Amino acid sequence: MSLQMDFCCPICHDIFKDPVLLSCSHSFCKDCLQSWWAEKTIHECPVCKRRSSRSDPPSNLALKNLCEAFLQELSLEEKAAARSEALCSLHSEKLKLFCLDHQQPVCVVCRDSRTHTNHRFRPLDEAAQDYKEELRKSLKPLQDKLETFNQVKVNWDQTAEHVKVQAQNTEKQIKDEFKKLHQFLLEEEEARITALRDEEAQKSGMMKQRIVALSKEIAVLSDTVRATEKELRAGSVLFLQSYKTAVKRVQKQPLLDDPQLGKGALLDVAKHLGNLTYNIWNKMKDMVTYSPVILDPNTAKSSLFVSEDLTSVRNTGRDTQLLKNPERFEDYFTVLGSEGFNSGTHCWDVEVRDNANWAVGVIAEYVPRKGEILAGYWEIWFRDDKYKAYSPSLTDKALSVRNPIRRIRVHLDWNRGKLSFSDSDTKTNIYTFSHTFSERLFPFINTLNTMPLRILPMKMFMLVIRMIVRWFLIPGNEIIVLAHKP
Image 1 (cartoon, rainbow, N blue to C red):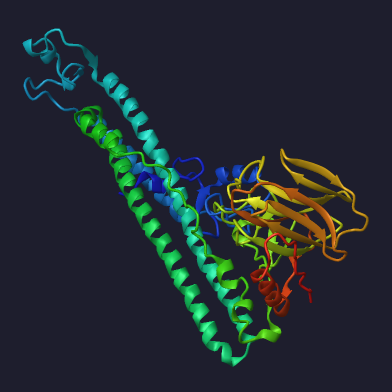
Image 2 (image 1 turned 180 degrees about the horizontal axis):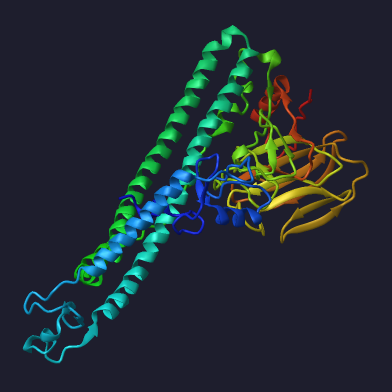
């Protein structure tokens, strides 16, 4: 017989009543689904979150018939168990009592025998009810854990599918880039596709292993729950005779910690797409540009859209259904650069807007991605036509800016503890933070703007000059090479 849970609605966890079928193949009680949707703005599946195209999904007649047959079979089993009254093996009398001291059913003759002198007794049905309730309480954590594991498996299945989508999209972008570089770059393209597919295989294999391990845990829990539920449906005598074994089986099953996806489950898209043209600059010097910061889409809040080349971001104004991976910001409209800095000097320009809220700066690696951020970031932000230098608990300063800033330069000198912001067009310093940094810092952009904020590229020639100057830079000199933008 199938598990009873196969006939249970995922919302009410009871046997299906008038089940309906969504296009994603998940079924729910009709009333349960309508009540669920009444609290939502979007009609989506409560399990896989796929949007439903119909507000009145069709009835699942096959499942309805199966549920009715299951209920009839369950009723027959209970009636048969109730009719099968066992007799005492010693006195051939009906077993009507339960000896609390010996933990076994007995008849009235056994009660008065020498074997049970001064023992405590309970009516059979009363004792069965008490122990059933006790077993149900022991079973409840396992049932809850099984439900949690099933939901985690759904999320992991979605993660595995998302990895494949990422791989497909990334592969397409890589191919589009290489088409611009003509035939002699074919070997370089193949090498990068191979690296991408290797990582896809690694990440997909890792997810497959985790899913297989989780499936095994689910199978073990399912077997325990199924066996225990079957014994709970048995008559009092049969139940009490196997009660100890059932309790041991339930208690023997450990309550494992909830599975966690962990960091690094998604593809490192930035590794494959970031600075793609720069990495082949020896072959295509005249057409190569370099972006000093590559945005990491795995960190972007769900309402942010990161461009295909990972250099610009805009706010779409609405949250999209993205995986809740550990790297992603949930409460701030923020995206990080893919690379963090814990030494040296680094400089990048951001093309900003003067008609919406935005912030540009650096943020510490330890900063949480969920909940309020109370410390660990330094920024210049723009709001309501005002500019401000801000770092929680350290700096909160209104800035006097004559002309609207179109391009803002961020210059980080990690070793000296200096973070400077300037107007790229006028070369005017806006503000400089002084702080002794001790952690890795990531560039970030925070925006409510529906128009993109963009990391400006550097021409290869100016990048080479900058590298040479860095190499021969005398300690103590304040020399910054300014790269011309296209």
